Image 1 (cartoon, rainbow, N blue to C red):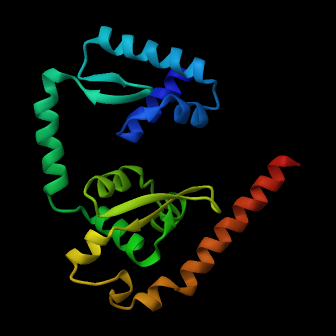
Image 2: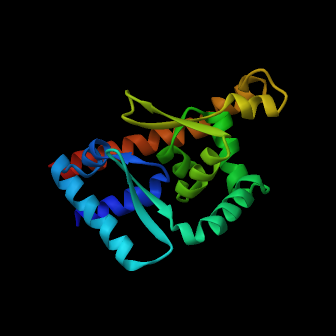
Length: 190
């Protein structure tokens, strides 16, 4: 089960994760994470598929096999340089007008899972994530490069920014959702 969790995290991260971080996320001991990760490395090598788990220092990362790396790079280049999809544009707009915003808030607003879209926008350098200690989660905001690309000095110069940033209906929706989650948690505890 720990291997499955680590494999999932490495797939979603798209970047190296340290044993310490994997341990925090899976709530497992460093020694258990190290052992499970090493087993994953071996399983992926034995599988001889298109992906590998690679170790660098005390970090692990899911990467494409060297035999197909050129294909993966070509595809990734097209993904990063091609036009944004409608869902990506919607998500980017929400981040621009509502940022900093959590993944959960984005998904509440859009009504769908935004993981892959966020990853694509992060790779393109249009948004950035940072850990918000008060919310205990990652929040997303547009990058300075994105704002400069639009020819603006700051995000507040977007059309109707003040009106849309503090839109009452959206605030009510987000607050109702937070209250509902709190009530659900309280009911589960009792």
